[in-house]
Every structure is written in structure tokens, then in C-alpha cells.
Length: 230
Image (tube, rainbow, N blue to C red; front, side, top):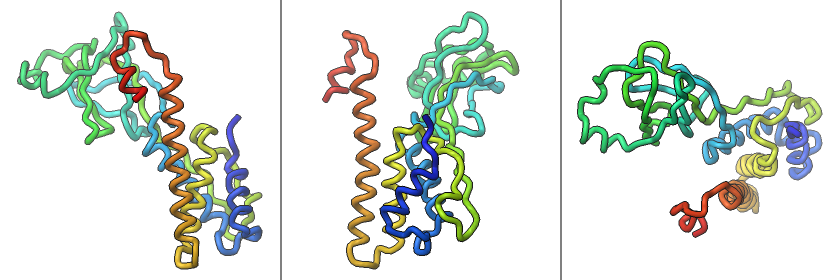
């Protein structure tokens, strides 16, 4: 069941002991919540993973949809034989077939290449045809912002649900508290509270990642299992 943004803001108002929302206006806390959602996706792109059939443009260089933040994987072609698309190292392809960008275009893609320094783009091999080439893509999408209530509102005016999965509700609470205490960091103890809250936020994301890896489906012969356990 989705977690309401109001419930998270209420918990923060209670923890800050600011029931009338004078020192920390509710609209400000909602902005922190929206920032926190983007921070979650920054560290955990899979939190907002999206699967879509995406038509490719002509050539080798491709981009993810406009609502995307980062490519996660290319699974298969969506047309023809629905052949799987495998990731390869672009440096190897460049060395073996330097002119591969100019090869005849096709509608069935064999490989894709990705560079983390350019997270919204990827390359395909062979080059995609002007029309007819389409792949099933996994990518991280941008979370939708929670609407800010009018100035002077109480937490009860906050509407809508968070965009990230509900398991990140506690992490968002910790992030909002980090930003709230950072606002008053000149007061004794608040700087330390802010650091502690951010540590809780970061640690909760790390713990969730370890739990995901622990229960992920693997084969007994997977050579990466030892590394994952380590």
C-alpha cells in the first residue's frame, strides 16, 4: 500500500516538536521530501525502475525516454524473433571493427554498450534502421514531486503519495530530518543531529541493497556469487 506524503510529514513535525509549523513550514518540509526522493533514486536507480518498449532512432547512439534518469538494462528486441540483446565492451568492438558505426542498419539489435559517464545514452550494434527497431528497456525514471501546500498550512494540507516504493518511507523521514536540522545547525547539537540523520538515511539504503542481493535469484554455478557474498 502506498505511503501518503502526509504521514511522513506528520512524523517529521512531531519529531521536530513544531506542531504549528512555524520554524519549519510544511511547504519547506515537502520540498525536502521531494529532494529526498531524488536522492534515493540517485543512490538506488532501481527504486524507480521502469520497463518500456522503446523505438530506436536511426544509427548507433540512442537515448532513454525523456522521463528517465539512468539506463539500467536492455533486455531484448521487441520485434521479429525477440532476440536477446547482450551488453558488450565498446573498446573491444572499436578495436576489432573500427568502422562499426557505419555498418548497414538493421531492425534486430545484437548488442548494446553503456558508459556510466553518460547515463541517459547508449550505443547499439549493428546500427538501428530508420524505423522498425525497438527494444525492451529498463531504466530509472524521475520521481513525481508531491505538491506543496499553500503558505501557513499544517501537515493535514499535504496530499498525495510518495513516488518511491513504501520501503523507503523511513529513509525519506531521515532525509527530511537531516535537512531540517541542517537549517538550524548553528544551535548546539543540531549539527550532530543532522549528521546522524543523514547517516541513518545512507545506512538504510545500504542495508536495503544488501538485503536485495541476499535474496536475488542466482544459479549455483554463478562465478559472481562468492563476490556478492563477500
